[in-house]
Image 1 (cartoon, helix red, strand yellow):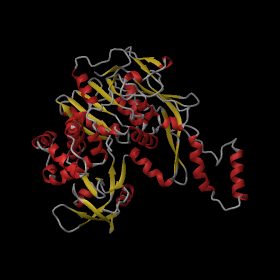
Image 2 (cartoon, rainbow, N blue to C red):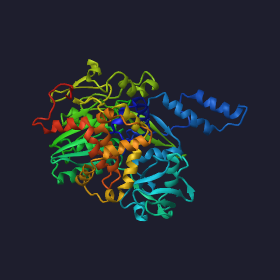
Image 3 (cartoon, one colour):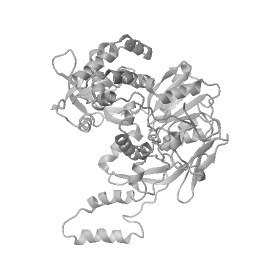
Length: 552
């Protein structure tokens, strides 16, 4: 589920297909503030007499009664598919859900939960949120919702979410099972607006080096990033690792504002151009909070749209070092246009270009299937593991003011390439991870240590807690054996660091430290973080004027 787990490279086909869908649905770039003028057409545009005639014939002469509105619901998506992979239609019933990540909030009860064992287990309660006010605690099991049993009935997670969410101000009655209490606890929660975080982790990874995990460009992204930078600078941050791996994009204005935080005055950030040649160019204004300090930005094949605007702006202005793997390659700008019935279309209205003039949009002329399978193709052609497998046409070559060579035509190529790491990927690990045994163990472990874990207030304290448990790996191996996975000592030893890092990360996420604890522990097996720290420890952390170099 979480992108920094090494397990994410074990099943590349599944991961590639699912995350491509996520980028297409949730990683679109929107104009806000400077919306293009949209002329409202009639039902059909001029020159489309054939479509008008067909609808009229169906309405007046077809043998059965047909709803023209229902027919249009099916026709509109088909029309948009002929345009480009990112122009999309959202029916009224789906639009609110599609907009949540962009708007930065939803109405709900304010908990994070999982259903690893067909039971809704509360991982964490949002501080100050509706559930916290009602007395729900981490580790609670939600057994009933409004008198309907949801535990042990193999209910789909989306169905559970629908039951827990609702309009702010409305009430939901929950039946809670709490460890140590025999009877079911009745708790009524009044729903409220719940923020969706763009910044999921921000902490000091070294005495002078901060780390920020940046998940999406929602309407609150710039404010959250600014607050995180200010907080870390107060703790002594002079260097920053900005992690936008897996960040599939969002709002264009947020990408511009965030790029401004890292650039000195009068530097081009991005320009957009529409079909008529109208060009809008954005520049930095010099008001950023982190314009001179050392900077590393992490990208991967799932970093898309606004993430690529940010990475491209920094790379083309010779600001910081881009580390990781080639980004997704989405360089199209959408605007959302509402219809009177509450539905909307996200229509591609422009292309964006990095300061050197490169378009990073990957080719889509070979059809939607090839476009959507691009990440799988990269895996099959060994691109995730070898820089030598990546080829760029000379016609797409550009040069920055500092003399660095960069390329357009399919994502941002990092300054330093770091291959996907398969160290520790034994058959034993794949089995315990693939069968969800490792994750279920972390839930069981958290339950048994809940009192201590709930009281942990710092990463240092969490490290001491885990370091004191010298039998953690053996305890897990026994748990896995009871679940049917025979211990294979040679493989277990080779996977030791991966297993322990994931256990510590998932258990840590169940503490008040939440994602700070998760990323702190998963970074023990993160070779891209290792390379970033090495770069930041060098006296000169700039690049040498070539396109890329491969991490040793």
